[in-house]
Length: 328
Ligand code: SF4
Image (cartoon, rainbow, N blue to C red; front, side, top):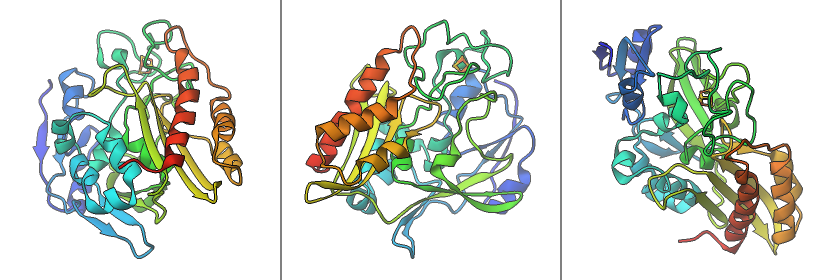
């Protein structure tokens, strides 16, 4: 690990003013410290943001909920308001990592965790995400955990978060503060596809800090499901995950949200498929059509093509479970 300086500001403005070209903000450190130990990240300065006043969960005047960026994953999942109004989010969080990690990991940091592509963490091999133009050994190598949607010639990595899949389905908004002031970013615009800049995971500008996540009023509390399929029953990243949320009236779908994890560089939404479900009976044939729409254009590699059919089945199953009612 390289030497670095360390600062622990107590005000947001102070944290932002300290940020330089080789700085990193650190909260729980559950991903950044691993990256530093593996020599993937080599910051010259760590700005510890744990003393900033970003630890509250509050209802908004619009009927939604604002979650401070430093709320731990565990505190968020077990918060009464989240359990009652946004059970999809609580379930997704509890499907990820381990209790110890969820106690340390922050809400803001969850959005910023980096891919678990094996080659990305091995600094002895090339990787376009670590060093643009060096190559992507995953394309012809071990690619069981890699993308089937939205990948590029340069990178086929996937985003590893479970929480973010639920936040994408719930149409969350990311609140950001930086040298240029404050802004709000729709969740679907926060993470990006790799394209020809795979080193960029998201649309944050240098020095920008996530301060909060806002959830809209609609929480789909009655009909939602988070389905995670993985190689081990716990403490494993998703091969495929699905966040499904429905509003159903008299057996007819009035609103639908579907987000996929483990299949792309960002949580995957297909609003065409969601819109096509509106007005349809909440039953298998409609779910199968939605799954086909979402997977249109999917393509796999030597070891991960199975994810296409797995995703189709997982979408149908998650929508069926959501229709039956949110599990307690
Ligand atoms: Fe690097 Fe992306 Fe290729 Fe993995 S998939 S080796 S992260 S460029």
